Structures are given as structure tokens and as C-alpha cells.
Amino acid sequence: SGSDDLYEPLHVSALTEGGLAERTNAIHVGDTILAINNVSLRGKSLSEAIELLKNPDDIVTLKISRKLDLMQKHN
Image (tube, rainbow, N blue to C red):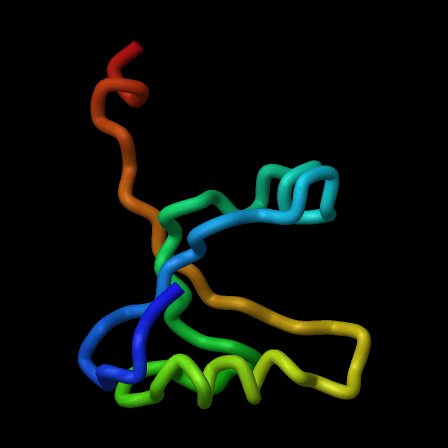
């Protein structure tokens, strides 16, 4: 999710149920997407990010940032 505001980060708002990301626990709802296929999303709109995801190759590389849950870390 995101907007076409170039200063707002893009976040994972949902995962496909039973999809690879959900099954592998590699991506979580709330993660911030920093780059797609080594192209930084800084200054890019949501529509530009969507275009980067329309990769003709089978592999898409995401660079993500995740906030740690401090309560979970201490348990």
C-alpha cells in the first residue's frame, strides 16, 4: 500500500493466503519496501513501484525494512 506522494514509504498491506511470502514467513504485513530489483523506491510513487514489479523475469528481489517488536524480543 502507499500513495503517489513521493515522500510516503510503501508498506506491505496484505499477503496472498497460502502464497510463498506467507508460507515462508519472509515478508510480513507492515514491512516497508525499500527497493525492488535493486532500484530504490526513494522518490518513487506507488505507480512506479507497481511498474517495477511487472518484471518479465521469474525472480523479483525486494529490500525490506521491518520494525522489531521489542516485547517479542524480550520473551
